Structure formats: structure tokens, C-alpha cells
Image (tube, rainbow, N blue to C red; front, top):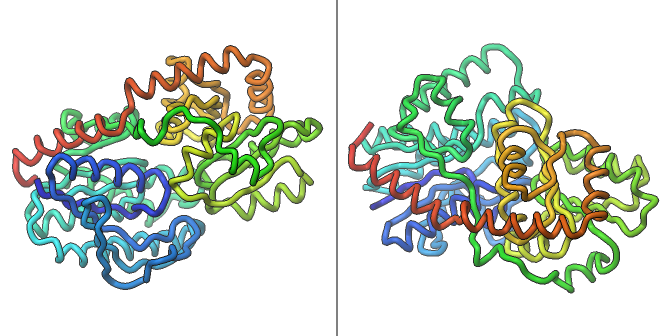
Length: 410
């Protein structure tokens, strides 16, 4: 099967869409399929071009047997609604233009979270008269409305109509949380054409391992206990709460708080740390994707955090599976599907989001109950290895694509 995949993000970018797309496509190639990915030049989240790349209109490379076609991007940090929309729209246009280089795919797949990428996939599929599969990883425009980046009006109405058109253009839809099925089905799309493919992990990469002594020495983590948030420092993650939880614990010098990543909220968080005079909180910046297993192994407690908004009750951050696969001690500060799943499995500490007092209490409870913390950590690894192995999930998506292909164009 010849698969054309449209993704706004791809390695060496390190966010969840890039990792999921790369690992799925790599598996499909291993199964004998021909996979082409159209993506942009890597610049997320700082809007700065990664070393070794040029912001040319077209450039190609081979990544693990995947043909990768990169297009020119409007380079902008992951902050500011207008600039982000311009970034998204330009990629949709350049991706459609770049698809001329892919002459005869059997089907076209496009992934959100921003649906201008999905829109490009739908247009490309129509131009090539091929079936289109949409992968929904976030609910646009619902999420940007709840984050306060867009209000009721003409633009929102247009985006909502585009959302409905995008669903009806798809021969099949893949989602990564159960809650998304209800949202899409409510628009009139048939449930039987929606496939649930959770995020997952590569168990060869994310597995229990000893801490990295070099990382611990470099960042003075050899003594005491470290609590870390690893990921995008974005509007969705309520990281002010992380800093507020650290404030009353600054009298405990054995506790250190680490923010590892970059994103739209970084400057704001750095300012908050300075204003509060918190020497126990450090922002370490974006770290290379290959170092993530070492980082996870080298900190003591890991945080998964989402804003206290209805849209985030539908979200399952992919990092939770990576943390648990390495027997991490995890606090989930969220409501909804991810909280329910981890509490039912007994693998993490669940607390209400945006509640610094609850976060501080959970940290202290983990320290006070090392036996229980170890039990949940081991249960988490077994749960992920049983339910969320990326190869198994990639093959499930491949079977779904084959089923859609057998039916022909939408």
C-alpha cells in the first residue's frame, strides 16, 4: 500500500504528533508499505529552524525508510493566535502544493491537532481521487475557544463549518481518545467509521532503566527528590500551579522542581519563578527527544497536568504512557478520561487540576508511602505493556486503512 501522510510536525521535533506519526509510519514501512510524509521544516515550539535544515520551499530526506518531503514554513513561536493561524494556513497551502511530487498514493491520511493540516489532506485526496482518512488528536476549534484564544463570531462560525466539512470528507476517522468518538458522532458522522487508536510507547525505548548519572550530576539531582514536568510549556497545562505548589515546599531543600521543555508559556513561568524568589524551581529548556528515557529515569516524581476546562476532560497526554512504561511515579492533575483510566488501573496519583495544595499533598504522600509508590509504578509498566504498545496500535491503524482502501474513494 502506498500511503501519503500529511503532518504539521515530524522529528526532529519532539512533540506528541511528531512522535506518533514517525513511529506509526516506521512500522508501516517495516510491514512492506511505501510511506511518504509531507511536513514542514522543523521549528516547533520556539519558531527557530533546527540545525541542519533550510527554510526552502521543498527539500526531501529519508527517515527510517520513510520518504519525507519538507515544505517552507512561516517560522513563529507557539504563541500568539494570529501568527499560529498564519503558520497553520501556510502549511496547508504548501503541503497541498508539495503533494504534486507524490504521483500515485493509494490513500491520503492527515493528522490534527490543527485542522488546516486535515483540510490539506482532504483537498489532496480529492485532487488525487483517493480515499481520505482523518486522524483527530484534538478538538478544533473547541479547544482554542475554551483557552480564550477565540470568541463567538464570524471566524468561529467559519471554523466550525470547516470542521463539519472535514468530517464529512473523510472515508474514515481515527481518534486517540474515546471521548472524541461522541463529539464526532454528534455531528452526524457514523460511529462505525471511527477507529480508536490510543497513543502508546515503544517498549524498547521506554522501559525501566537506572538513572543517568551524567544527567543527575550535570543538573545537581544526585541528592534529594526531584519533581518534574516534561513536555510543552503551553496554555493547556496550568503550569502556574506547579510553581505555586513549589512555593510552600521551598523550606524543604531536598525537594527540587524541574520544568523540562519549551513553549508559549515559558517566559511567563520564568517571570513567575523570579517574582516568587523560588530557588527550588528550575526551567531547563527543550531537551532532545533521544534523551527523554534518560530524563524520565533520572527524576523521582513526574507530573501530567491539564487545565480545568471541559475540553481537556477528553484528552489523554501521550507522555503518561512513556512515564508509566519506565515505572515512573506519576501524578495526574486532570479530570476526565485520563484521570479515570489511571485511577481504574491503580497506576498513578489522581488530583484535581489547577490545585497547588493538592499537588503539594500528593508529592508528600508519595514520599511518605514508598511501598505504595513502587507498587503503582510497577502496575503502570505492566498496564502500558499490555494495552499501549505502539507497534500493536500502528498495526491496528494499518488494518483500518486497508479496510477503507478496499471500499475505494469516499
